[in-house]
Image (cartoon, rainbow, N blue to C red; front, side, top):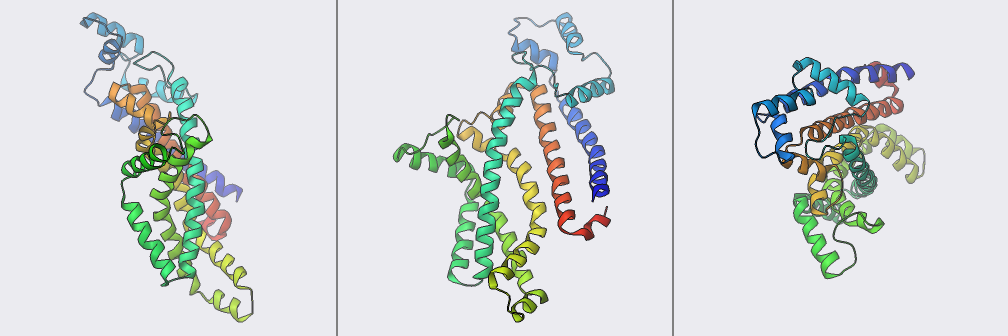
Length: 310
């Protein structure tokens, strides 16, 4: 198992290098001159060629492209993403707290999604074809079809404004988590529980289930075995759910005025703050690679046959 983990980590390193290079290339393909963006943000009344050249030299933009990339990548490994073009503050001082706020929301939402997906998936599989199965699946189709921003707006209007039960926005207390988590859970649990249901239905027809019942094993014990085998298929999906939610909270954070990565990235894009955009993309890409690696390791731990596939 140890050698598998080492191999899996080594496979991830070249992938991160490629992603970081593509991130740097795409940002530098922008037709906007970063030096001009900085000067505009500083409110310089007249931008001259001499001033542009001086600013490029200060930002290191006069260096060859490949040298700028290596300088940026090495600094990024130390969590030094440069300074913001808008306010001149270090990018990590801005993106660090925002990342923690988004991560809190993501982890709580992921736990709620996994719990609801397993609960609904097991219930629908054991009650296949019955009213409860059809009702849950029908309701999930309706709820997942609703745009998250529309659902969030409805929740704010009814729960926060009309009933005055929860705050409408911000991150002032634990109650501020409730509405965003509910909206994110509704948006994703309706998708992931169908995977659990499908996997369990496939396992219900396996021979070990028939033998277990013939041997007189308790139904609860058989169900737990079915669930364990079904989760092997779903671990990769749940593992990738965390970075997916991390990257898709942009809409929810802006609706609920959540001080996270989503809100910060939108402001950076509108303000053309390239260092923040680069850091945001790189962090999301690293999260996808990290959680994909973790899910593969968990799968290999649960199923030893997968250790020979790498």
